[in-house]
Amino acid sequence: MDLAAALCALHREVAVLYGSTARRFDLTLQQAELLIQVHGGSVSSGELARRLGCDKSNITGMVDRLDRRGLLRREPDPDDRRITRATLTEDGTALAARIRAEFAAVVDQRCAELSTADTAELARLADTVTGALAAAR
Image 1: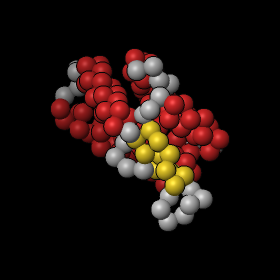
Image 2 (image 1 turned 90 degrees about the vertical axis):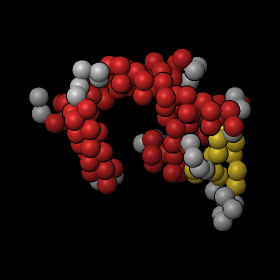
Image 3 (image 1 turned 180 degrees about the vertical axis):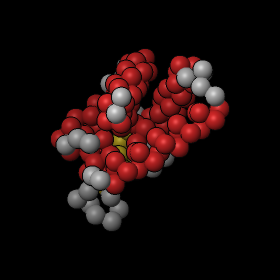
Image 4 (image 1 turned 90 degrees about the horizontal axis):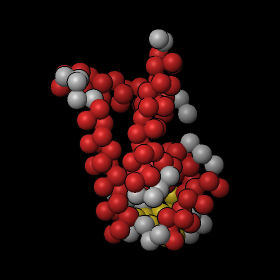
């Protein structure tokens, strides 16, 4: 299998696992990822669109739904009031942490056959490939 095919196969499997984790919290995969991206700070809609690889109009709908659920709030950018930033509420912060923890537990369980060295090497390579792909955007 070549690199592109291997990455596509890995992406499919990770999306299935991540999606099932998100559904346990009544979220879509994209909504869960948005919460994870906002976790730990405030992020503009434009930056979220860039990080998630989608159009800003998609972000608006996701933010609306998460805002209605009380998981995040919109705030004006202190330096540029034309920009709206998303910030997690206390409930959103707790949920993002739970999603991360549950997804990590599922991955650890599914990859239990890998040695500690293989796990570390896979994480290192995934980080390197992710950086290379993101830099090319």
